[in-house]
Image (cartoon, rainbow, N blue to C red):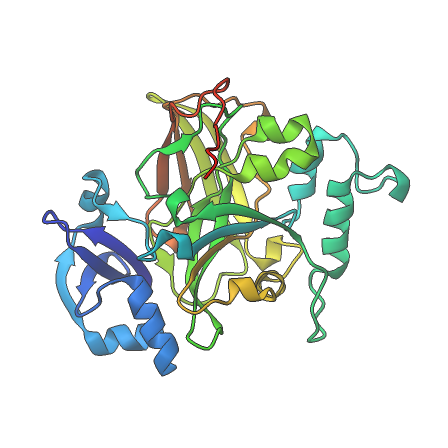
Length: 334
């Protein structure tokens, strides 16, 4: 089952479910967030709850997308309680992409490996423990809260001081936290973990800065397990031309960590187990247009698609005017 959210022409939020090609409103569901928390409270599967609620009118999702009425497939009423986070160097091949900035190989001596390659090797050797115990922890990063969420079809806005804006086609886990602090997975969605790779290349310690950019996910949430082998396509369109198109792989068959291991190392922190919160946790990628020498421009459109996840995730890139590169943000004393 795929879940999404739209606004009606009157502005009302509707939860949409589909199996196959037909999509329908879910009767009595006020939001995916509320629906998921109700299921967490009652110990019920989302698909079972939707079956009990029943379906309302059919919906043309493609038309809603074209009209800009598709919103992110889960939101929190208070954006500060939605967390955008992720892990890196988790995919077979991702180290080569990241380490193209450092020019080292996994076969090099330990003394000459970059930190990226060391982290990748740790994941290859210990990211899938298979013994019921935690595996090695991955690279982890913070992207922001719900104010940084960009709806499918809307523009990803870089700050004016940014050096670049580049796509990262990923799979994200979508979670809510139950009343007792237990994390519950709603499902998985496509995500564009949009980042500033030029800034990151200046110095690896700028990675945290480079990740503080908006992100988009959806348009639909795949309810259930993540397929072992996910095969999708990432492309960039400039006007009528496609300037970049490349396959991307995900799923545990193409990863150096299990999903369970990545989830453990995120939710082991109590700050990420606060009742009612929403987490969108991105699992990494091995495909970047930046690594292939592509420099994006404002107005470019990023498109990410993979068959199990429904409609493609599509976002343009724009730049916000404030603060400017040479503008100082001044703090006032109280």
